[in-house]
Amino acid sequence: MIDILIPVLGRPHNAGPLVQNIRDTTTVEHRIVFLCTRGDHPQYEACREAMRQSPPKSVSVVDTDRPAGRGDYAQKINQGFRMSHGEWLFMGADDLRFEPRWDTAALKAAGTRHSVVGTNDMANAQVKRGQFGTHCLIRRRYVTEHGGTADGPPGTVLHEGYDHNFVDRELCHVAQARGQFVFARHSHVRHYHPLWRTAPQDQTYHKALRHFRDDQKLFLSRAHLWGHVGLSAPERKLAA
Picture 1 (tube, rainbow, N blue to C red):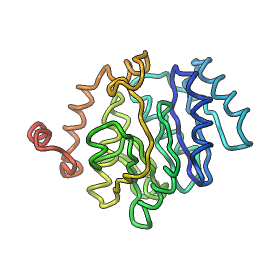
Picture 2 (picture 1 turned 90 degrees about the vertical axis):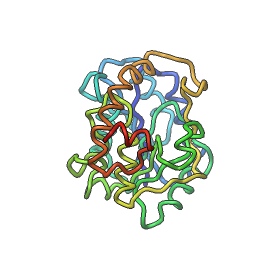
Picture 3 (picture 1 turned 135 degrees about the vertical axis):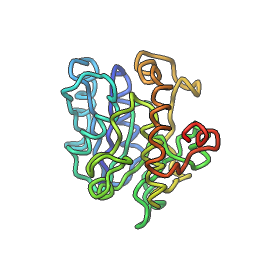
């Protein structure tokens, strides 16, 4: 079972098409979990409608208690982890397009050895080189026993100190340092984003990028916790 966790904010039009896309391309048993912000009524109702149009129990909608402030994405992923039970979880978003066999390709890459699988987002140059994954398939036992962050307690997937950016890189580089990361080149989960000129700018993207430099500084200040594994040469100099 894969729990596909989808934090959402301010994009109600994406909910229905995303559910249909996942249903069309995913062959492994799975459940979609939308994680909404309390008070974001159009988004919540769109996710509820997508749930009503889907097979029973294949889609859940969670109305979180916190406002969409700092660390919103990480907080929602961590809450989704605590509320779900599948052997695997997928760290998703509503600006993704899953392609056929994404799930079987990722599970094949994981095998019995690896617990954090970077999917191919077909956009980020570092991701396409296999250096990390923006959206990962994660073995639940890995998070339960070790945690996904450098210093967080077991049961925590992502570090909530970042405003938004670099949570994926810390997850992947920590897993690399532990010998638990693998890149699944043939697991295609396309990421549509203004940075790649594949999605229009909106308030949610603006919010996500507003503190990019601060997030980068925090990431580099924490890199010593995993031995600087995964950092480029320029990043190593900045982190020194």
